[in-house]
Structure formats: C-alpha cells, structure tokens
Image 1 (cartoon, one colour):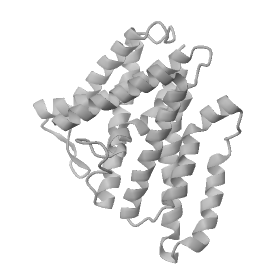
Image 2 (cartoon, rainbow, N blue to C red; image 1 turned 90 degrees about the horizontal axis):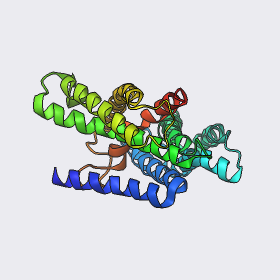
Image 3 (spheres, rainbow, N blue to C red; image 1 turned 90 degrees about the vertical axis):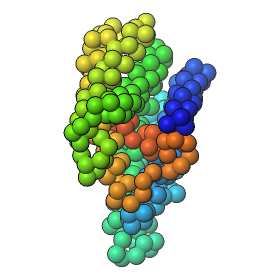
Image 4 (cartoon, rainbow, N blue to C red; image 1 turned 120 degrees about the vertical axis):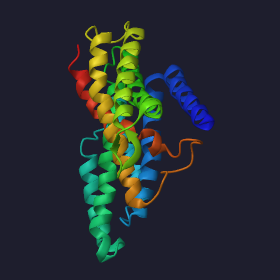
Length: 274
C-alpha cells in the first residue's frame, strides 16, 4: 500500500508539473505518452490472448492518432483520415505477415487498440486545446476529468474495504463491491464540486460546483465500467497486471484504464455547459 500511495503522489506531481510548466503542449504530450505506454501494454495483453496484433507500428500510429488534434491546430496538418489509413495499412499487412488461423484476430486486435486506446484518449487532447483564447480553461477541465475518474477508484477502494459486502462482478473483478462503487461515485461528485470551485475563475460560467457534481456522477459510473473492461482483457490474457513500470500499481494500463471511456464522455458533457 505504501508503494501505491507513493506512486500515486508522484504521478499527480508529474501531471501537475507538466500542466504548470509546459501548459497546453505539455499536457498534450503527456496524454500522448500515456496513450503510447497504454497501447504497448494493451497489445501485449492481446498477444497473450493469442490475437497477434501489429504492436510496433500500431503503437506509433496510435500516438499520432492521440496527438492529432494538437498537430492539426498547431501545424495545420490534416489528420481526419489517419484512422481509415491505418485500416488500409494493416489490412494489407495481414495478407503476408500472419498465419491463416489468426489473420482476422491480428487485424481486429490491432484496430481495436487504435480505437479503444488511441482514439478514446484523443478526447483528452481535444479538451486541452478546446479554447485557444483561454488555454487555462482546457487545462483545468482536463485536470477536473482526471481527478473525478481517478478519485472514483480511491473512493471505491476505501469504501469497499470499510463496508463492502455485495460483490459487483465476481467473475470479472472479485474485489469490487456495490458499496464501493457507491462510495466512489459520491467521492467523485465531491471532488468534482471542489475542483470546479477552485477553478471557477477560468471555467465556463455554467460549470458551477453543483453542475460539476452532477456531471461527475455519470463520469464516475463510466470510469467503473472502464476499469472492468481492462479486467476482462487481463483475464482473457491470463495476466494479473498489464505491466510493472509503476511500483505498487502495475502498468500504465492499470492507471489509464478508468480514463479511457471517461475522456469522450467528458468531452461531450463539457460541450453542453456554457
């Protein structure tokens, strides 16, 4: 537990430092790095499950997909057709680089990684660069969304340890309980309200602490689902942790799992608040 706490503090320090010193560019690069490291572990899990994805090129292209909105805004590069181009590239590659029995799996696994990890995390970059006239707003919204999703994990863990009785999904993640999930949602709502109040000077006028708390609830619920999806993938690959680069936590996928589905949901919900 001590290693987990220390690693969590260090990760938050890295996020805060990137946002404080390097602003929008630092945040976009940080999200891309998270996407790339997650994809490396994601493809390793798929390989363990026998899907044989094109991991190296897939990881490189995945990084470009995640960073695409920033590249388009900063340099005027057209990236709208990057994902369809990937479909073409990997469709050609499976003709001669995979065995007949796993060609479909190789193509499906590679493209699923690009969509599920790279494209979904791209929405964090969209949030970060969303308001060029007020760059601090995108940074605070990004920080708000990450805090709401990750503190749901913390709230669920602590509540589950204190009073968890009813298992949520024993076949997927035996330690998760309905009581823990409820505690995680409540904690997320509180964190959402607090961060909205602290960032009230730069956030949209309609993003009040009350609205922030209400928005935090569905995001927390989706964060729980996102976490369970990673558990399903790990069980299919018969691997406990996606990696070991973060002491006490595991791999980058173990950190980003709850962020993957929340990124596009947060982007959509933010667009409704003015």
